[in-house]
Amino acid sequence: MGRSAGVQRRKRYSDHVRVLVVEDEALIARQLAGALADAGYAVDQAPDGERADFLIQTERYDAVVLDLGLPKTTA
Image 1 (cartoon, rainbow, N blue to C red):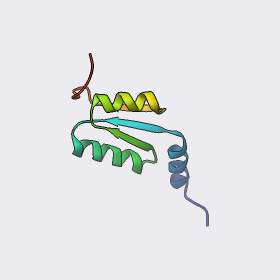
Image 2 (spheres, rainbow, N blue to C red):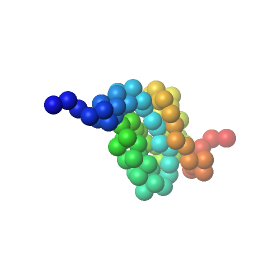
Image 3 (cartoon, rainbow, N blue to C red):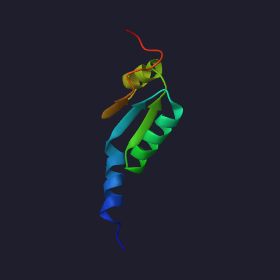
């Protein structure tokens, strides 16, 4: 029996679409990353601007979900 279209779609997204969640509130970051992962995206998390900057310079992301009031950001 074949997979449903939803399962196939999730697999395709996780193979191709990478998202970085930048959020200092642990609960919000966990919930958001979990929802995106459940939708089939490959998700990384950064708790502050320094870590986000490092990840963006060393990894390739298709999208970034960014908390604008982060600690450890450079002006």
